Image (tube, rainbow, N blue to C red; front, side, top):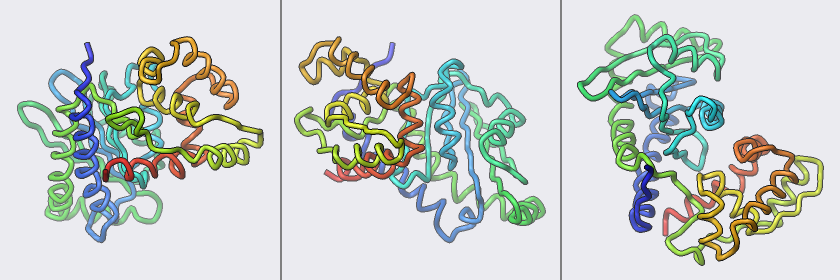
Length: 283
């Protein structure tokens, strides 16, 4: 049964995850050899077949989140505020081998050329895909012909990835919830009017949700059940369920997963909600 760390541990975990993932994001976007790679994915598959995946693809992350029919909804996930690096845990691995890993990567990005590297240990195996699209394919050809360059690129990335996954593994049942502080009265103020106006323009319909509506919605997206939300905000279970149903109806979505995808697609999540993550983490 899933366990939840205490509130101090939750706050520390958010802070630690941010400290680990930001160097990763800088590494992927810096002037290092990795910055010349269009797409990176890394799957660490453990002996019990659960896996952590790191990817530079937002589409892959969203798809994994929404594949609940295959039991691949991540029980741990984190991404940086710039939406450049994604980490999630799969409860049922669907990257069983190199071929399936490449097939999943091709599903989410138009890969023209890819180099794969596999590292095995007694506890797990790491599989990396470095891929480029279009005219950049000659870079990967150079890497194939110069194994020393490829090894250097893997080593440059591996240290950061190892620390990040090691931290996530300690919190395998923890879903990072950037909107909740240690006290529910300390929830960061949401720019409700601005979000409503933005969504109204993007969806070409009048959206009028309250601050509590957005909090209920985001809590639901991040894995909180209606009973948990009701207890936290001292309202009835039915109140929460009814509000979530009204929200989904207003946004013309049939599920929380669809709402999550909609917020990303319109840009509302990145523009308004992800900005709160850094504010909360730095406190």
